[in-house]
Length: 302
Image (cartoon, rainbow, N blue to C red):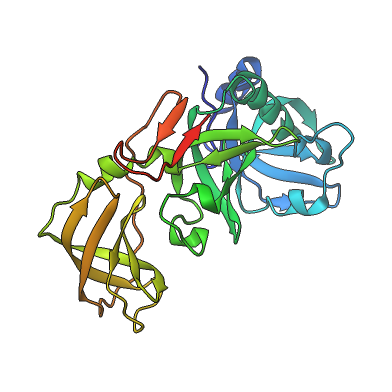
């Protein structure tokens, strides 16, 4: 299956020769360049191989029928890598040759040939573009955006998506579903391993780093991997997001519990675990996080 890259990862057109650029017109290859200006003619302007390129306003974004393109969606492209296909050539107001570019055409190709055939559970690459309290928006190809909700970032609960990801980070995600508008919704947690897979990376008697996720009257939940947290004794001096070192006292698969003892709560540097993938390709149909012995069942059916 064809894979369309996120903006910032496509082939850069800046230093291609005119022969190469003309060849790309014939092949329809998706390229990228940094938009240098949004001019008074409502076009994005580029420089390709020493020659100007223009992207008309209506070609800056592929929108559903009946919707209009907002100015802010175009002018915020200035200074950022922007993908496109070269649709042809024209002459600018000075009579000089220029390339005609279309981001909308690149996005239509991406949807038709790559995204539309994908089923729920399909694993795809993406890039985090911006973060809100409710989730992270990701580029899943040619600037097409998909939401990664906060509760799909990991089994371990977090207070903000920034606890798990950052803008510009490249991820693997699975397609959770499509919303009522047909937009793709992503999930990450199913790729980060089951309880047993994560617990197998640790052993009683080890001392490891962790991140405080929740402080309760009965104990403190401390994450030691994105999909794995344990419980330490209550300590009101700890706070969510705090990095600590913990001693692993016991691992109980039948109860899906890990007993921890806080060793050092004065770690000075902040901590954010990078994703460790247990699934990197293909399509998931069903994912069971829980152990067979556990009464609590956590699963996803795609």
